[in-house]
Image 1 (spheres, rainbow, N blue to C red):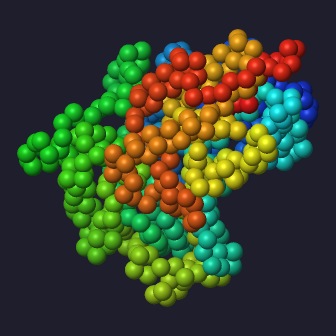
Image 2 (image 1 turned 90 degrees about the horizontal axis):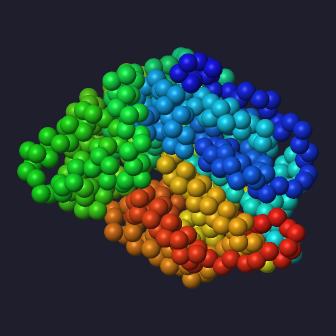
Image 3 (image 1 turned 30 degrees about the vertical axis):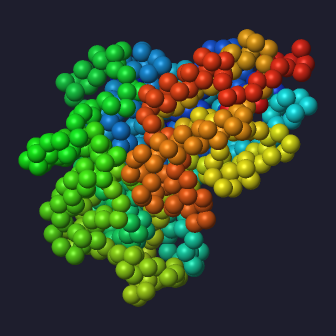
Length: 549
């Protein structure tokens, strides 16, 4: 281990494929599905309770989204100094990031460092995908099976599968017929891809594409970008980490409240200052870089007039950067307010369109009709390529859960119950079933709440916990009401499930703020888990249990 806490590289340091000394069948207290940041922190917390846990992970290493997403230019859009676990003060102080916005290899190295530092690998079974989890009402236990033939009985089954972990390929006619190389940003080959001199297509202009396009443009012979929806993007102003920048953050970790949703917000309306002052603030935020641009004023996401001023400012920047006026206009978002789709952070994204080898195709004007053996055909004609990169996003929030055959009481299937959209209480559990949702701050809060609930149940001889149908309805209404108070519902985003054909249009995230959400969850627990039904163990000799997260 190097002196700054980083290992070289980001690959696992244990043999892939299984847990040494464990059999494929057996019993444990908790099965955890996924070894991303949520899964490994949960394992650490459960061990502190003296509980046995097994983690099943489909990848050959830990890291979750940072294991899979290795596309060119992949990096976090949250500043590195805020992107670390807070549960260990020693871990916070010993780890040093090399850049203001860390790249994928370094974040993966951090995940591996955490797994090694806290000796987590011995309970993680890699290259194993959970296929089904069924609750047995007679034994009050979950029966979990995998694609490697494992069959495990557990008191708790926690889906630590993340919100953006199920990559989606678009349903385009002829997609399988293409004779060249095909890639998805979410499943990039781990040994890299050499695109030098090739004719490359990128389909999609979301966050992954915005990071990848400048890098691919510098490699490829030609790059043609097929844009479905233009995105607002803010320059990252990424730079090397310096002691002067890192030091104050580390000194303030003990007092910094990561759940404060107002952190960094200019607490004034954009409409309560002069046009000159608005411009000055926007220019300052643009020069600083990063997603803090959306905190330039306190009502950019709730007040259309205020939002318009921010949207106009960013569009003016796009027009100033992109030399060809027609291309610039295609790149300017006009159909939705800034921030209501995921705000992107880039390094020279708009500048890439000034390169002579880069071409932009507006799919609103000339939609794709099919993928051909030689390339892509639109209503305007056919383009030939050597490689196609799909930057088409994920089946967000629910995809990783509904891909597993999860069945609760009376055989109720999660994907059937959620046919009209997700129904949960606190975003953590669903009646007749239960799941854990997943940003590191929110992961820690979810895991801490879940582990505290398990400890409460063990101490009180309880076996199951599930929300009432009424609590689900009330929570769903609360989430929707919070969303409707903002401009988020005006965008066809993955927040709404709009990127998946046929997926119900429901605003899925809770937008009330991380701090408010924590207060809601803490109040529920303090009131004896109000809104939940808790039942006693049926067998006095059974391990304390729950039909759980």
